[in-house]
Length: 148
Image (cartoon, rainbow, N blue to C red; front, top):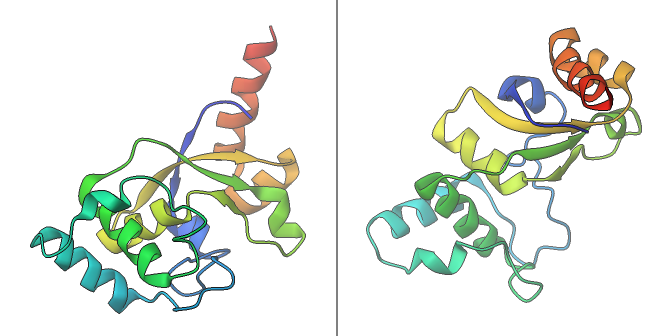
């Protein structure tokens, strides 16, 4: 997989939406949109120290949905530079396709973003089927150029 592409968020949401179906298993407290909005407001108004959510969650923080909400809120406030990672072939297998970046995708949705930077892996036919020829050409033509 080469560099990232700009992908319409709507193209991802037809397969995975971390706000409707949180992908974080075994939560002791479920995360939902209201919880994220409350965490966003708490951090904006400095009622909580949002910097604790600046780094990805630790194993200790992981089971509590409130920590996921805090992480999404922190990203919505502060932004991110890393692309999300999608495995297009996982869609065919019925697996959750976002392999890295569910918090970033959730933050982008909360912000009403229309596009997000993504790295997409998988077979060319799967990328074409799910995200279109234009996206596949950006990925696979760039890969071919790197091999020259």
